[in-house]
Image (cartoon, rainbow, N blue to C red; front, side, top):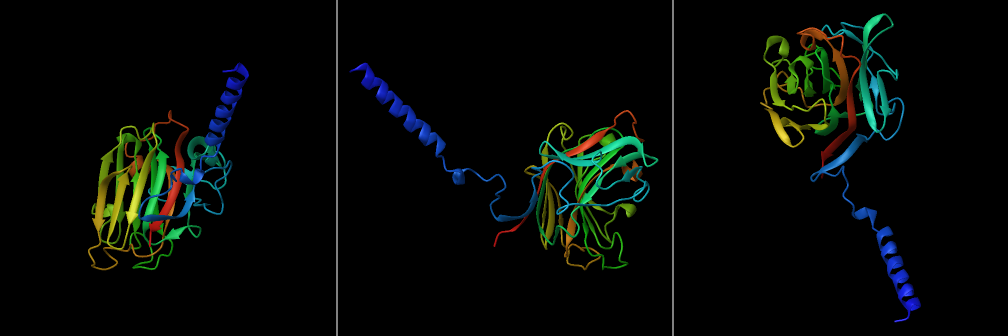
Length: 279
């Protein structure tokens, strides 16, 4: 065969291969947010830079001692304590004596921006470490209209809590009028995740009218069922919102003191996704 003919044929084959490789239908690629039986209704993928999206996140602002005798002050819209960079939400606790408070941090909330009754809540995060750290991924009610109008009557759902002096132990809990940690009656499950401070894991809540379940990745480690005895046992039938925070010290996190050599410490979040049962 003539060399020129061979070269032409080779060029045509390569061109066809190139065209085929460039026309792959992206619709056929797997959607990383898709979960069978669930529909995505709210998310933050943190694909931007700067302060957290104000359409999705607000702040609880407070001085030390506001709750649980915690040592940090919570600040709003301060990049040193909460920001998005490199595709991740960073919540950072610092020992910087800002505004004359030794420790600074942030507590982000979806209140009045994302409020839900039931659903699947999936947060992919890497946790801080060190004695005195107390990160949490949890939920509180948006309207407080049960019992005494306060806590714990209106309920609390803890998807993930971790205290630095007990490294690698993840807690999931609920609190309400009849089940509350101040009386030692809270309902709690624990799971050991040895690399929780060096690797990302999915912290998941599935909440329905009948039960609350929490998972780490695909492993179920806590289940509580609705006993149908009234709001004192189950106030989890109305809108709750998400909270992401990093506390320092406090009645639990500070049980063995605060190691001042660990700062700054951060909780990093790759995404937050909320699903409803598919109809």
